[in-house]
Image 1: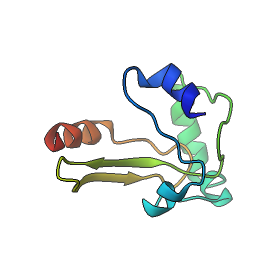
Image 2: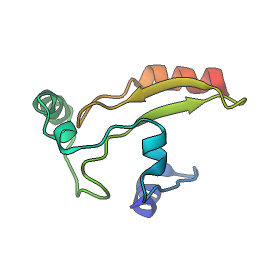
Image 3: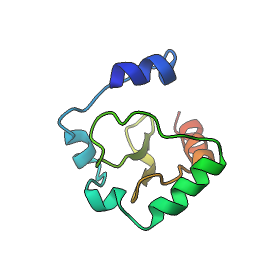
Image 4: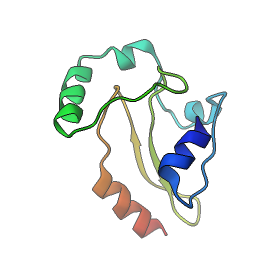
Amino acid sequence: MAADFARTHAGPHPVVGDPTRSAFAAAGMKRGVFRVVHWRLLANLWRALRGGFRQGKVQGDPWQQGGVLVFGPTRDLVFEQRDSAAGDALALDAIVRAARQGA
């Protein structure tokens, strides 16, 4: 799964995997069937479809939600966003701003 992601999305950036999900748990990322089968799923699905996005093949753990953690050069957490439901939108502007400030 990580190799496929690296090939299609990562460009020159390194990609690591977490098959035991221990890093997800340590980071407080949520997991569970009711995170996918959630009332917000329909709104998130509609937003994605309107934007031209389509669900591809499910890879990895379908119940694991993701998120973004941005750390600064001194390893301090400068931004965090944890998905609560499938399809939650990322705050891309805030992520980029945090990454630039933390660099």
